[in-house]
Length: 503
Ligand code: BGC
Image (cartoon, rainbow, N blue to C red; front, top):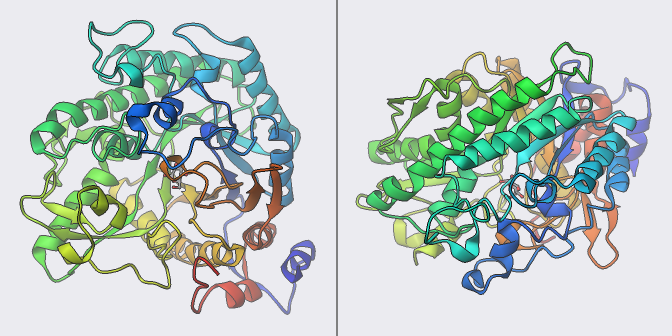
């Protein structure tokens, strides 16, 4: 409450803003259609949640999610309450194109209403075109073997060149229809996450395990190429179709993708093997897609050195979104596919029947552990800004997701404040970051984990769908109002031990 009052008052000499972000720095929150809307029954995730073949994969189905499809005005009001400039949201492809080459006008009208509700409140929409979901006709999980080859009802996934082309058509349609409302476009959310969770670890649709080097070459790399092709085609399509400068900054469309990247470090920093293993892991996990669509390079043999040239992919990013959640230790492990390395992530190791101890991995720092068992290491956000700025000089950066799974607003507030301290230091040292978008506006459907992990600035009672503010939202509101961190916020949330995630 005290902090809320602070947010409403003018600059305070007793409690000055000690870490001021640059004028024009963008603040916001994010969501994704399938995670909030409910009733998305025509996409790959719905199949993954409901088909018996994947029964053990998802904790619970998305169902009505958090009622976001109908509550979009309320959610826009929450953003106003935060004082946010930007809302990152996605358009559900399977709603607007339920079957191949057929538009659903009522669904397009729905998304226009959503975008108008944001603009009417002075909030800039940043629109994602693919946030892990795609229509069943792109890849039908009930017919994964694709016997008889692709049809209009099942294009058999991203290795079919028709799929990148279809994605570009959908993207062009969205850009043409909404160019007057949208200037910020994201082709893919975390193509690396989609690829590695779906085709390597089997945690996402289509649930494939490919853990041998040959299976990876045969089944994973071709999907990566399809995704890169899809991004490049959608980039060009959106640029051509969105010619209206909605926000008057002289640029009708800024197009990019959002990249999942964690702070990946060797278990033993003095071991050249662990150091090289961590580098290979980061090249695959955090750099594969930016290397492809910024530098036009692919590390096909996964040795940590991207050497295969793809000039046709290069320079197709106007702004790179990056999304950070945790620190990940990596241990060299010869013979362990595909990288001769293991990630010290208990849930990944569990898939292959190993525990942290078995492979010489440290336990995550108990002070930083989240309810998803990973380590929300706050310096990571800034360290990654620096690393990305060095690897991709001249490419503007934005934090398009950062957050953690926690049941307490206090812990969320602490994480936001501590991550921003590191981010500001990286910006002061030259990292060109123009905004920070928190994941997430509200609690939502956390994919395979269902509704148990809570990421929301606002919590949601799923019986009533009521949203309630958390301390995370209150502190974030103060930060946005101040465009920085005032001394009392820093003192209260910026140091000391965290609450444990359950407290
Ligand atoms: C994804 C979100 C997800 C979040 C938290 C990101 O990888 O883009 O959809 O909910 O992480 O796990």
